[in-house]
Length: 245
Ligand SMILES: C[S@@+](CC[C@H](N)C(=O)[O-])C[C@H]1O[C@@H](n2cnc3c(N)ncnc32)[C@H](O)[C@@H]1O
Image (cartoon, rainbow, N blue to C red):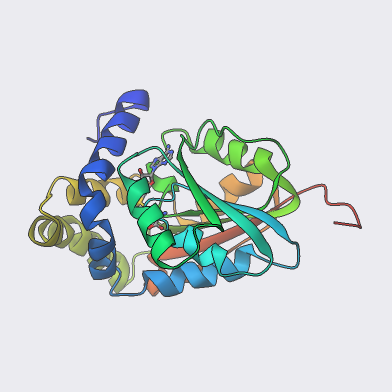
């Protein structure tokens, strides 16, 4: 996988998430020690401020972030997009079960080419998605484009550790040797969870991701680290809001 680039890598990633779609939620709970819902709730609090209007969740997967957004009264409706079509029926089922079907809709789309108008959303979120994007600056540019001036982009992601404390030494070992076996035992797919450590090792640190958000034109960029610095929530604001919002 490490040697795949561009479209070939994107096809591999879409196929891989398609294969694990049915087991994704269970594996997410195991891998995050049950914390992933709390992290999305925190990230949602950072995404939704006073403005009211539509929200966007990119790389929505089984829709957990989109569903968090539907709980907020400021959000008039949510669009969840993902390029792995197998994920979306799971997101739709969950949304129906929670009686939120009139508040969230899902469609197949690639983060690098959003089929959406400019300046539209009060916030855009991505949970555990950006690490997989083949051209992150381009995908960030797309999300910034569709945000309203003053809108927030929020990214929840596993990041490369900064510094080499005990966690810095142990986490890569856990990831490299333990997660593929958890994937094999609970998810029936060792390959997908071999991809996970590879994708984190090749990804940015929290500080580097902040710098990339600034380069994408976002202002007031901040990040908050979670889970001993292995996960981070980043937020940045699209410039250009007027005094009337
Ligand atoms: C680890 S899952 C995260 C799902 C969900 N956001 C969550 O918080 O659990 C990553 C998702 O990103 C999607 N994805 C990866 N690259 C994408 C891209 N370029 N465009 C759209 N979706 C993408 C995958 O299909 C997968 O569903």
